[in-house]
Length: 104
Image 1 (tube, one colour):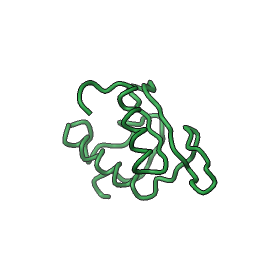
Image 2 (spheres, rainbow, N blue to C red):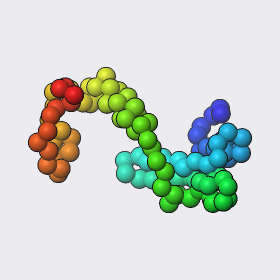
Image 3 (cartoon, rainbow, N blue to C red):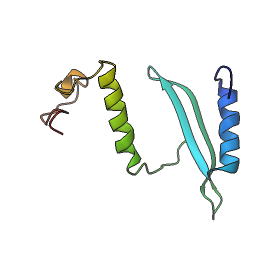
Image 4 (cartoon, rainbow, N blue to C red):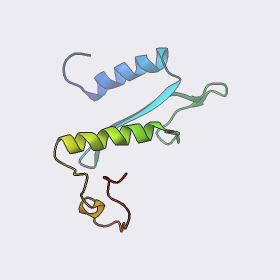
């Protein structure tokens, strides 16, 4: 895909992907708490032809751990997170009395 990313250009690519590669998918783009784009297409159940919707619950399995680990390392590289920082520095409204990132 060349040029600027627009809702229509992203939707066109995702539509082709669902038609040829995957049974179904959900996609959301959020910036500063504002939903910029959300999309669902394909099937969540191929046999029963159940459509994928934005409300369909999907299981992330172990990918969430990999995604979170990479995000944490990127934040550290950009100086936005420190291994020895207390979690309440970032989430002050959530009480936490556990270990720092470093011992993990």
